[in-house]
Each structure stands twice: as structure tokens, then as C-alpha cells.
Length: 86
Picture: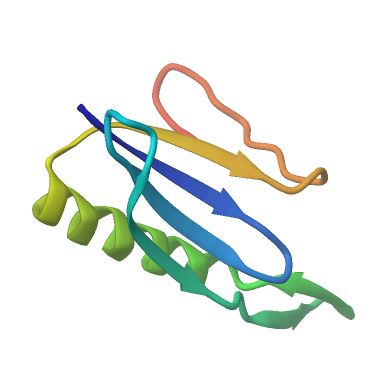
């Protein structure tokens, strides 16, 4: 089974696909966009979401991904309940 790993960073975000032997079989990268909201700079989460969705879809089609792990920088969090990720 191949495993995909999404790593969301403030400077770069990456998707790696690992084979069963632990070697990287595919890699995709993007430099996240920053936008201004309420007078502060924030990551453009909509653009990052679209990139991640496309990257995972393409990797799954190419490699038959069996699992997905996600990593993010220290100030990342997500609110989850039974019906949504917000």
C-alpha cells in the first residue's frame, strides 16, 4: 500500500507519496499564497485547499494511494465534529 503525506507549511506545502519500502515515489510542491484579511496577512486557505485536493486526486490516480497523513506548522488547528471539518 502506498501512503500520501500532505505537509502544510507557511513557506512551502508538499505532497509526498511513499511506497511500501519507504521510498518517495512521487512529490508535488507549492508555495502558498498570502492574502490580507482584516488588516493581517493570512494563508489563502481556499487556494491551498484546491491545490491539495488536486494533488491528492492526481497522486491517487497515478499510484493507488491506500492512506493519507496530514502534517501542519505549529499554529495549525482544525475544528471537527460528527458532520463537518471547519
